View 1 (tube, one colour):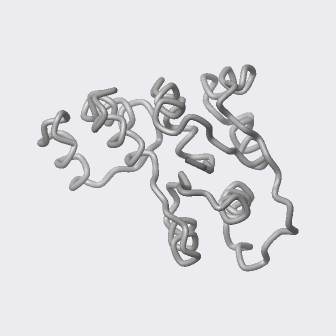
View 2 (cartoon, one colour):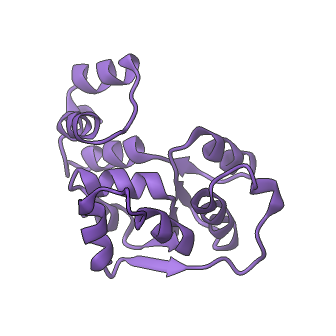
View 3 (cartoon, one colour):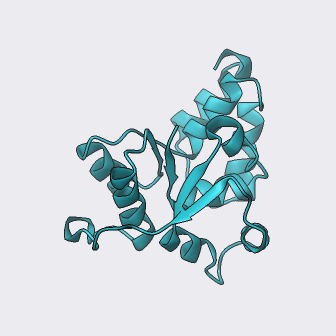
Length: 161
């Protein structure tokens, strides 16, 4: 399965210590160079910087082969490159959280999921307790959640995903 990742799903999954789920679910993950640059921002959490200092083998860093797509100019560089790489690589899945990026990716026919989708997929396989991972996500990161999402995660048996 060809999977491309934008910054925020990687950032959040690393912060809650669940990065090992990615190779378990997808084997390899393609990451644009701009995403690595965003993850390396000085304001990023130290755990993300530590992860960057020893990028795992299952991460495949690539650059886009085509010039920047001007239709993506309203998005940040990581989102732009992630969408372009997903198209160029004929990715089966794009990991992206930001609404504008997801909408544009879906408009282009790309299949997307975000941080929560990764956690739910891992819970479905029995790899994690989705409610516990979600609890860490909202308590330990800047991930924004709605009351409806909180009710879903905390009221549902994680084994039923």
